[in-house]
Amino acid sequence: MLWEDALCRVVRVEGQEGADYPGFCRVIWRAHVREMSDLTGVEQRRLMTLVFAVETALRLLYRPHKINLASLGNLVPHLHWHVIPRYTDDPNFPAPIWAQRRSVAAERRPVVDRHALREAIALALSESGAA
Image 1: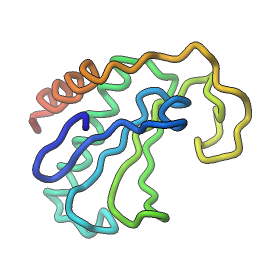
Image 2 (image 1 turned 180 degrees about the horizontal axis):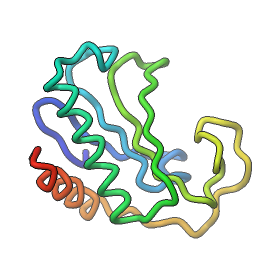
Image 3 (image 1 turned 90 degrees about the horizontal axis):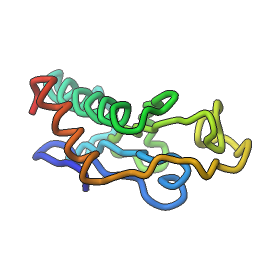
């Protein structure tokens, strides 16, 4: 767990996806809802503020070429956002990470420091006024 409050939590994706896309995070709404439109306007803004804070933290710490944001939930119909740092030498770039691999991931990948990422998320939230 990188960050949490009563409404949401942020986790770092582990395993092969986490290795191929260093810093890959999921922002997960705690209560079981299927769609963004199931949330109130205040809840929607809270969730997206957190998604943007995670994006900001990843950009600050790891300087990816691009950040991909995705909310799919086709397999697990529980509201969550994928925040995915993309690098020009990742195995799927420029295709989506779920596409067939185009290459082998480069050995030159950022090392993700959980503590630094946790602090950067908290800082981005405080700077947004949503902490």
